[in-house]
Length: 158
Image 1 (cartoon, rainbow, N blue to C red):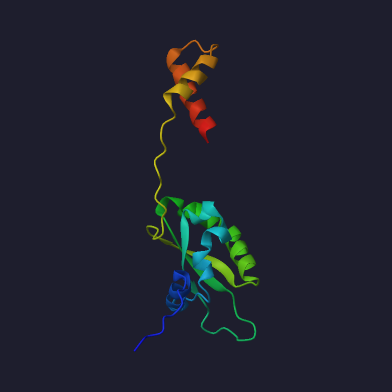
Image 2 (spheres, one colour):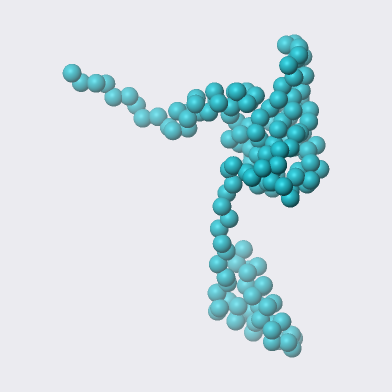
């Protein structure tokens, strides 16, 4: 007996169902706040903070729900900066939701779970550095000229 083959599905569709149940236990109505975090708050904030859960008030009125608290995981040294940016984060998250869903931010200091590994940057080529050093004829100190040439080559590469 031949079994009918199902159509291939995207992995995101399959995982989305599993994630949505797990994230619902953490107070997230949808997975988008977690999966699109960098788009919502910006890459600068997303590099140092990630959402853990949303704490909704227990006595919330169904007609006019009370805004919740967004709990963020941040690394220790950046926590004070994220605390100062909490108003910006609340504004951007509420703009994403389309209503005043979040009223405050709570911070939990811990290592980030979803950290992008920093790739080492290669040194600029010796030819480019030498070409830039040749243009720096006004600099008398040879060490300073080489340092400026390396800096210039690194800047021109980006």
